[in-house]
Length: 345
Picture 1 (cartoon, helix red, strand yellow):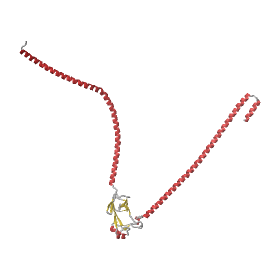
Picture 2 (cartoon, helix red, strand yellow):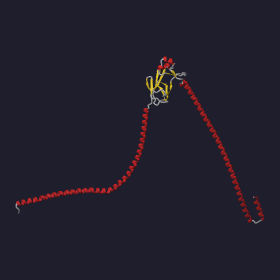
Picture 3 (cartoon, rainbow, N blue to C red):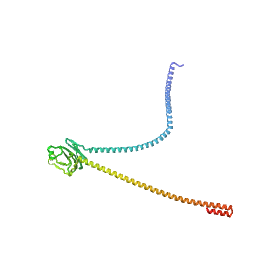
Picture 4 (cartoon, one colour):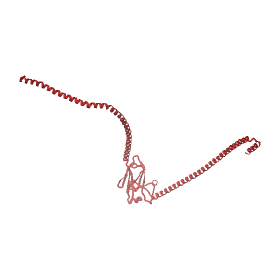
């Protein structure tokens, strides 16, 4: 039996021994748990990764091959599409270039039309100005459309034309012998001698014996000069009507003549055609007659040949039959009779 003091000591010793063991057990359990946990994680990793790796390894090759096979035609298709797109792009570019060129041309035309605007009259009271003027274009005065100016020659840089309508006083009308109270001041900023023009002025219907007088300005009308008759062509409504009538007569004459010539040509052609038709029919008749005649001759010749051949055949048959009869009837009288019959044939 141990003493209580010894028992306490033993308990302390046992406790000191058991404590590290317990600690070791706890540490060993934790370590084992950690290992198990680690092993479990490792297994999970292996279980997850290995099939994936294997499946990937197994499938990777065919998948890579299939992808490769799929990629090649895709690349070819892509190349073809790019080529087609390139051609379309070229066509599109050509169309765009054409449109751009047309646009540029239109722009240039617009710019030209804007730069060379159609001249319009600038009316200021009784005065009207137009600029720039052009060759062979008739300009009618806004005040009176029977007053016209047509330029037949212009300088390199044409200028303006100004027409002013002036009302004459009674004194000026009497002094000038004017047919109306209107006169026209026609001026230009172009240099004299650089242009030529034709001027048309109105006049009363029944007045044919007229003169045209001109002056530098209104004050100079007292000493106005007369334009020579060589430079004046008087036209009236009556004259114009006569011209129209004469023109119509000439037109009718030309049309009548043309119709007559056309009818004559038609008749001549018709006569010539009928003549040729009759000639062709006559020639055809002659050719048919010749063909018939030649056919008759050929038929007669063939007929004669056939008759001759028939005679020869008949004679040969008679001779054969006679020979057979003579052989079967050796009699002089019969022979004489047979020869007589043959001679008749």
